[in-house]
Length: 41
Image (tube, rainbow, N blue to C red; front, side, top):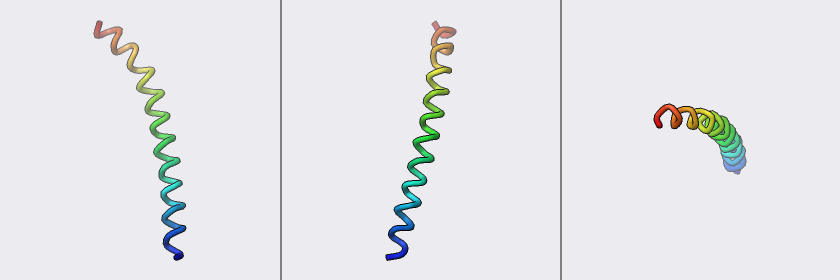
């Protein structure tokens, strides 16, 4: 029973970290995409 809550907490922490990383990467990609397309066109 002790391992179950610990795993759940770890998963929540990992999900939060992943979401934060995705948000940062998404913002960076969205910023990098316009200039890339502009140069490509």
